[in-house]
Image 1 (cartoon, rainbow, N blue to C red):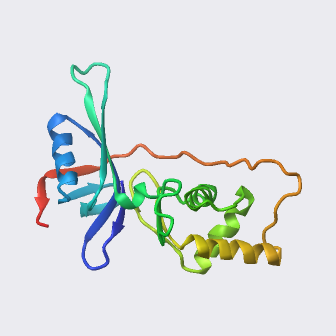
Image 2: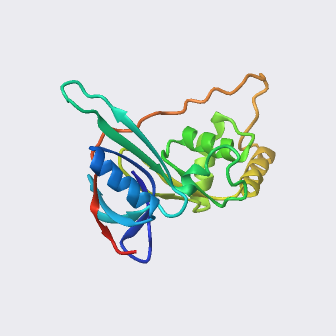
Image 3: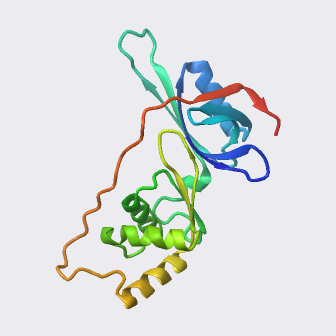
Length: 202
């Protein structure tokens, strides 16, 4: 799960939800997501939290066959509009980017892909330091991942890159080789409970 706290109360805007269960459980959660309902989730490291995926959330369903079980278990993945817009070219004027990992190379790679920025993996640590210096990054609630919210526009990030190149803080290699990105894949296997049978009032 990836969720963002609402500062006004104990609810949270959920950006990514991956759950498994039987037919009835998954159907109930899918209905709650499509109706923009608020419901409760709990898991390791955080107490019971009211969540919603908001408008235009996308859901994807599948089945997983488990040896020894007569029936397959159902898998549901729900993605908020804000997270889906982090795809390449998605909402190019956006000021906020939701990312499911805080690894420096992953972070710079995803920002670069979204906004079409000319970036190199060698600049990853510098970019994260700039985000911290400008208070443009915040941790989010994560189950099985380490999500962050990055604040900034394409114009702002291009400005950082231009100034850093002029100062010599970052450099473009002269060998002309294509960059090699070490993008991690470290989602952890963990447990989350979604109480879809007792949704909260809107």
